[in-house]
Image 1 (cartoon, rainbow, N blue to C red):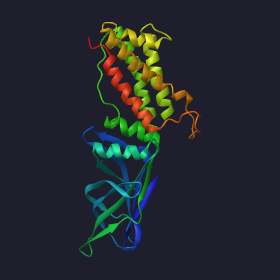
Image 2 (image 1 turned 180 degrees about the horizontal axis):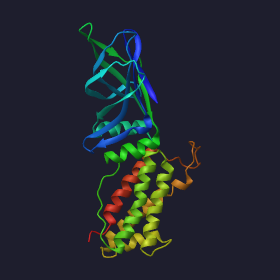
Image 3 (image 1 turned 180 degrees about the vertical axis):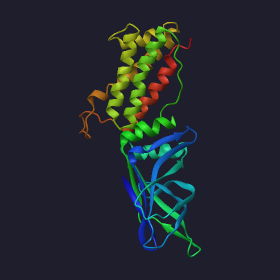
Image 4 (image 1 turned 120 degrees about the vertical axis):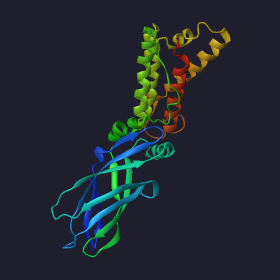
Length: 291
């Protein structure tokens, strides 16, 4: 549980905390929203009672750069001598550009999102307002698994999915759908930073398609069959393009964890996996029957 304190009359009696495992995504691809399960404990400052009227703040990236600003909205959280936390709805609106930028910085790791708070407080006995700030950032670190399972899918947003694919309602269409399921699996691996596995799973997607279409262990022949009704020159060039991607995906099984000396095995980088995913989406859109 990550938490921070806001001082009321030099007393750290206002506590804000968030359970990182309960963070989730909401909204839409055009307006992604990050929902944070904020909880507040509002204790009296010694004998001084007060009311938290408003709470705003900044969601940061790497603790420095502002990712988004937020406003919890009007509140009426009265100080209470009982030590209890009260849930508060905190939704942070983002935008697709911000999300993509953050995903590049996250690069498959846990999502580190420090928050700072500013509150407006009312002292009824003194009939006056005061502004308070958090003493330090709330160090919110969302586990990679939570971010990948509960945040990104809810936004329906992907930095690599460029096309929509409609699979025909037939046995052939089901073969393509089953093979494409591995591409969706590769997206999850990409979000988890498992770049070698991205290439391996994408290669298996084409091999699964070949098996489904009756070309087990003959992926090149499968590619050739997809363009059987095309002009010979077009068929040849298309087969070469698909075969080239398939050969690139063979880098996956030969990847090693450290940068090799010249002549050693290759290292699969994030950009390699992103390229492979982008190409796989485009290829499946291209080769999937439209009838």
